[in-house]
Amino acid sequence: MTSKVSKLVPSNPTADGIATRGYVDERLPMPLYHQVYLVLRNKILTGEYGFGALLPSEQETSETFGVSRITAKRALNDLAGDGLVLRERGRGTKVVFHAPTPPVKANVEGLLENLLAMGLETEVRLLAFEYVRPTDMVSRILCCDKTALVQRAVRVRLLEKEPFSYLVTHVPDWIGQSYSRGDLAERPLLTLLERSGVVISRAEQTISATLADVEVSAALGLELGSPLLKIDRVVYDQSERPVEYITALYRPDRYQHRMMLSRVGSESARSWLMAGERIHKNKNKTEENQNEE
Image (cartoon, rainbow, N blue to C red):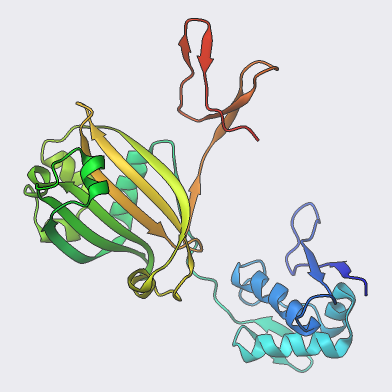
């Protein structure tokens, strides 16, 4: 059997007239109607077919995907069964799904300022506020003794009442004692750190992917094992002391992390440099961001 590849025409074409390509493949162990359904469903959920937009007719869908009209009709009926569209004879198939709130966007450049702004523009639900002995990893990161206490907090951030991040923070005891549970429920942690007299200098972070466990999935309204964006960040003061360690888990459908990159270097050694990052010269050697394509 041969796979069928066709062009999917959106209800609102882009300015240059280029449509997104849609695929159905007879070799897949999935009915063709369900393949068509999944492509159309994704375009509705992502807002490409906005509320009130008309989907292509059964005939147009059939021609677009290279499937029978019966297959196209079943795909559209399944969308209607999910409450995503309304099908009316003589009027077509209209999208009745309201796309969720656009995802929160954060830049790497101006990191601390963006975090403060996010804290002021979103709501927080404080799940835990306690003083505990640090784990080996937390002790190492915060450069504190394992017998010392650290203040641990767990928060969920919400945008328009919808949860999008799960935050676990650890700060040294001497900083944590400067604010209360109520303070953390009302103000961004960075604001509280600075209020305590900490002068924040910089932050280091790593970005990776992980899966939601039982506790996180319940807090973020996800299924167990759902994919998440994970950011581990260590914040330092002017004396290069680590003053905060945070693990932030984000719903990928409600959060985007953006980086601005510039192409730098000579033709023989070009690399990407993140906006705001400097090229350090040591004698005749240039140390650059080595994230090559």
